[in-house]
Length: 577
Image (cartoon, rainbow, N blue to C red; front, side, top):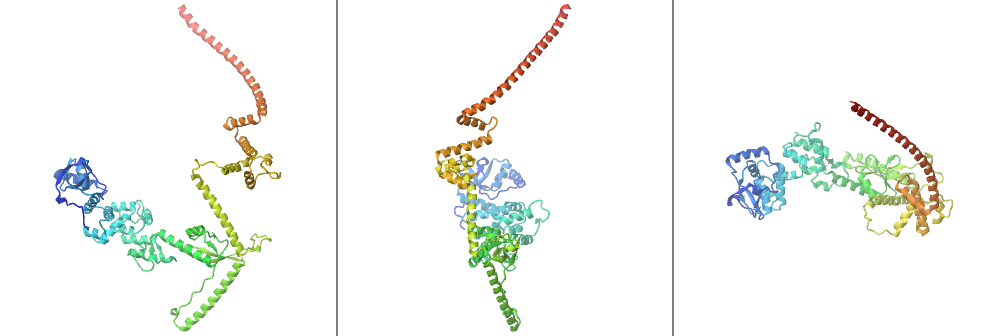
């Protein structure tokens, strides 16, 4: 392709540019620089200088330059403690600078496969190249370019192994055919450092490819959904050109495989229910597609684990083909046997339908891992200890559906409540005005503390009612009076005082304030009686304290007198001397 805007180095004058005025560019595909190799280049530069100029371009009007190509020579020059470096100053756009940097580095022999892959990817993303033009420009075949481009899909851990030559290019080429999930498992189980048993390091590419296909892909022949789209899918191992042995191939994208399998089971289950309204949906608790069950429940279908032993529904006999028989007589005899088997099958199906309609059995479409199967469960009779009382009648098919519909509605409400409880904490209620309905809700909860002697005030006249049901509470808050509100609130306060007031806590202070307002005389009497006891006890304590204080004073005076006598004796001895 045409390199519009590219400038030939030979056409430009070479200038000496101060290393202090140069900075690296983010365009360079080379991310790793070998220190030993740089040291060797630095020694060469000290002796001979930089033999090939680097390419730089001006940065705005700052007088600084950005490297277009030659960052390795720049780094080695710094290491060699040079002050200037020969450079070709290029006036090119960002796009051209990036392409020049990538192109120049791709021509180096020591570029790593990952750096090469990222470089090719950048050139294609620039819109100036495609795989064909890259193959021509760099003298590679298209398969080589495509293989390198696939390395950009390697997870970082495996890419690092390739960078460090701990993984061969051929092995990496096999691994990069697969998605991130499979690559992650391959690395964790077989390539991570320290793995001894099951390590794939050192294996040939063909062995790694076979191992991945065996351990991390699924045989499409084992699935029953329509695999037309799979035939052209790039994740089908048949389209990876290796080890293709016919058949549908193996699927290497498990998320897609699971989705197609789930969709197939859901669609087949819905079709079965449409054809047989009295059919129930069940699942094998040990072997079923959980996503299919979940999706069917979201669509409104009831899916349950069959209660009891499941008996396989009869299967339609397979019709014989004339090509399978050596003689016409043998085929005719097989056809007669087949017709009899079909008649037996039809009779058995009719009997099962009758028994299902009369409630003797329950027919199920049972969800498995890859398909659904027809089965039935015996319905326990009264004599078999089902717990059914004599007064209970067997439900008709329509009654069963109505019962199921009622339960489905209950489930919808239950799930709505559960989700609302989880989400309600996310609602910002700080700015909304507190409404009348919310005020009623408050009283609904306060009514839990209402004393029985106040039931009549809120409209409950029946003396036999010992506690308020939710229905009673809803009726009360629908007809609240100012007097009822005051009684409800005060009973709530009293209940909290009773439970939480003690010692010197804040609730105790609030209790005394409440009592002072509503029962001042009684509070004064209570307080007086307890204060009287306190005063007597206080008097006794003060008397004991007075006695102790007299004793302490006497003891102190005695100790002081003895101390004075001791001090006077040495003074008398000194005077005599």
